[in-house]
Image (cartoon, rainbow, N blue to C red; front, side, top):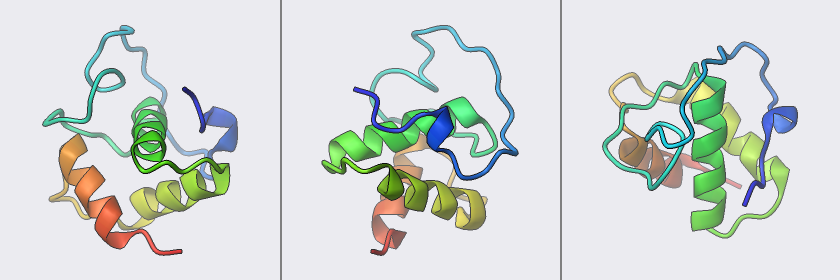
Length: 93
């Protein structure tokens, strides 16, 4: 289920690489795969996974996640799992 898409992004400075459909960076469960917060496809994938996981349904929640990841993600937070945990601890409404 896609809740958040490229058209919902607040920032426009992402790079857009091509991925195979089953690439773990944009498919499957959040795991120890390295996360690139400069890559738009990975950001969209992660936001959608978190929105489903936490039952968020509004794109403005996705924008809050995007802004948090884009502006404040520490460099030592490197894997999808780490980003999930960091966002959960730092997302404020």
